[in-house]
Length: 308
Image (cartoon, rainbow, N blue to C red; front, side, top):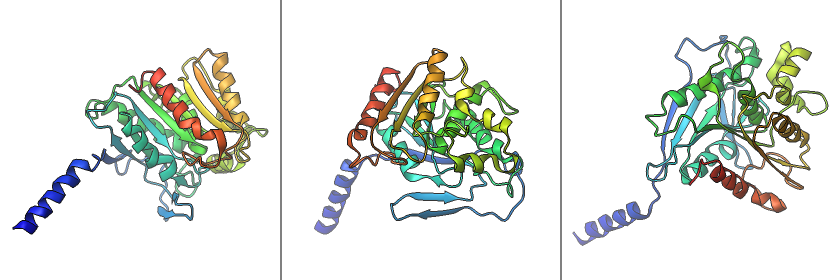
């Protein structure tokens, strides 16, 4: 009996001190058989963790969002949809996805990690339309279920990294364009980390551009998806982070987007750091002052009213 009592006591202590995990739920974006631009193919989704501990997902043809809902005692009512990067070829789903969802939950913000379809002419028609369709649909689902998730419909933003930053910026500038346009698809704010913004030759990350546009690449589509050219009065405020030594995505991507927002008098905050390279997420050790960027984002979220 004493042994059982000790075990029960240990369990009680574990439950007392073990942190409460956020509620999670994964939702398919589209009803089965009604996925837009779908083309039957043998492509299969694969997940693997590389030597740096980064979860890489490839071959995504069934898009989802995974909800990480902030605990009720912490919830501010704000939410953010996270778009991992990966050059529109893979999704860096952990250090640019679920890791951030947990960071936001700790601060009372619900988070949704978007697993968007990766453009592939074998699996979809007009592949350049597909990631944006998925992002729009995901944002609509979040708003439609805001009551269920204890979220304020007017405090739902988007966050993106690298090519995921391109998708987040595209959603911010194109939410009112195309066949899936809808007021409920508009983000209330955007957080863009080392984002691909432009497809113009002087600024473009060629891999992201070519993977998205595929065989339909044209001057018209290059301009259409150069988001610094598509900023309007309807574009939401933005928080941008970029390193000046980024050799993957030139820092001018963020600068040009910031200037386009400034021209339209849209609030924006940009942090540029001398060192950091590309793809760091919160892995900032040894990268100098870049280690301060999460604190800067925290300050911005508080100033915007999304954090207490």
